[in-house]
Image (cartoon, rainbow over all chains, first blue to last red):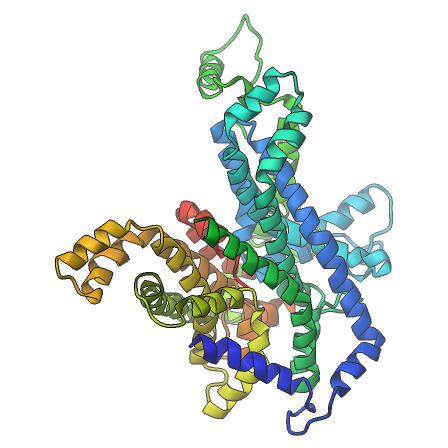
Length: 275
Length: 310
């Protein structure tokens, strides 16, 4: 079953990536050379890279911040705060898109702004901005990343919070007795002990971001330079009906993913060895 | 959040506030559990940022079309405007925008796509954990490495296979896809969990003459309930919230699930009022949020485990 679904199609995809749009004739590396020489595709790769660099790091840092802070609350407050940060995790990107398209909604100057971000900006006396069309410095991608963080920080927060709770209290107390301040306790005592979880979360979010499709698709459909690999794959497949190019994009994505995959498998093997 | 201790005026301290303080003292016996006000402030700000967007969506879904598209949702917070809330957006979304049908489709897709992999994977994991056969470890390692393979690797070839078999646009195509990709995660999780079960019980069952079949049904399956529940919730939400697979294999139309229907009928169309878009959004969220709130404990667990899904 798994061989049928993953191994066979995987090989078939590599084969298709060297064939023409209808997968009827081999065309050599043409799909790749065409893709790599098109400036649109290079922009797509760069935008994906921006996602991969910014989003996982931000998700881990923000998750770590929330996890550390809520750990200081009383249990009731901690549970409430965690539920609030965590609930967007349960809903789909489509649901989240209805939320965030509305936040970023734009109407020309002079018309009433129903999107809260533009309402705030105009209330402060500035002109309204079409947020998702701001391609300079990947600003619109940053707004999409903010939406991604809204949806995903809960995930890293929950895992990191569990890790922080697993830190033996006597190590923390010993450090406090020795006169360490809270920042030192966190950096020298807690952080080294939760490092494995931090790495796991980071890698997981990286994998998620590499395959990211739905947020970009429903928010901008890749326009205004927000295209990422997965959305361009989809558009090649269903807008341009070009199987060859779509398969080539998947193969390029695989090249990004394989190092991460190797890492993940090695981690798993280490765990097995320690058991 | 609201249980923050208020340092009320000492002389006129009222009963409720004293009670609150008592409770705080009980809950926060550990010295380090007493949060600094700045910590609380940061958390309140973060929670505020998390809630406000969703809250605006919820409010807007109850506003009339002209209100929602000409004034900000925050104006509806004024009690004077409370009379104009309406449920008609939900009626329009369900009946006219076809979300009622899509809701049924979402269930029709998500339920089998959740339970079939559980059945098969439970058998397979039993074999992986408790039986010896040649190539077992290699096979398991292959499954683990497949976990992180993005699922769209399989889309182009499977689209053609399904096309040849006449399965395009049917529920069966998505079921098969989710089963194929959910399975490696399920086997991975179940096997890891089963490996922690005490072997003595199994050995005594064997001594008592239990077959593999009996051992599986009477011992292993009941003992694995926590991990099966965790996977079930994770997989259900994953399938329910999935857009890409449904878009590729089913696409818009008769069989479209909620995610596709909302994207195409509401988000993709120009001129759909915010009142309808937000109502549609809330409809997609209702089921996952109920599942989440009801089964939060398992959900967190499933998510932890599901973090390896590719």
